[in-house]
Image (cartoon, rainbow, N blue to C red; front, side, top):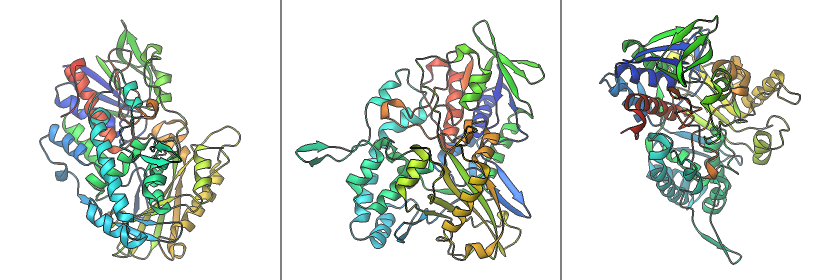
Length: 504
């Protein structure tokens, strides 16, 4: 039985802790904040309750596997998991609207043909077939296996089978997601639909590789799910599973230093000077934190560099008078009418916040989120630049002004919205940074192939024996399914050793 210290109580860290405890190890988690869940938080006021992080779940099989492997119990025995239908409603810049059924190719094709014109659905359906091929080629190395030692190979070849087109005596294929949209979808609304999946993860569709096609494919193939009571209930269930497997938690305990002895990780030093010895250390922290507390030997030039400069999210929680209409979509995406401006603000000239951002509106049909059935809880999110303390960085007042703009834009999805507002709460990138420790409140994206490997994440192993990295900032990257898989990978590497070849 090994002594294992886990730094942080995020979703990936807890997934690793539960699996390691089941394998017979003594696991202790030190979390600097007062609670578990990392980015999966909860805000409550006046009987209203809101998820402060992700509001929907994809690829629930990852968490189903966690619960079966750590207790031979289905996930559904611990949380009320429901499939969202429609998966999303989209309101495009020209006023066109479409609701896309959940996990139904035929239904999506029919809906797009009806809303955007004959042929639109077929083009999107054909795109999904090609996206599936990219998924099949990358699923194993990017989600289920430890990062390859020759990880650069993953960045060399584009797995998305882009259509070959002959233009001006030259044969060309799309290499970025924006080029896929332009050359294969042939409709600005389909392009907006495709690019919104990248934007939601803070990726620039103009530079994101064509392999980012796997992002909408994941949603299409595995569906979109909601947990009654909010995604915080999933975090609670994972935390309780850890407790049931005798994982020990200490909250309000900041790790100041990872202790190195005889060339390997040997424990941690807490604020105040207490040293806790361990045979293995698992760090579920953001890159800047690991660089600060980790020994210099933990990272090397031959490893995937940590990603920096990623965008964050601005979230607005709205308490509304009046009940939720029974036909309201759980999720509506209100697309920007100034794509160039939005992308320039997020990824280009740094000229400020987008004037008319793409806004996602979440309207859960969940009485646990409201004081009674005469009210509604609504959450708006937009991708925004991470905050910076340097001159020119967005201030809290600027974010408050953008939040007001988001409410106005959300009115396209929720008629009469402003007249129903009792109060609203704004959660800025600075708040995200305080909760997660990520620089500027940045949010990690899932690992993607191609693009020279720049969208991969550092391996779960480090150059310091005994020290492992877990969570959204390590392989295989951000998002709840990916964080859960990082926990499975770290547990496998510790339990089975360097011969571990991946989850089954």
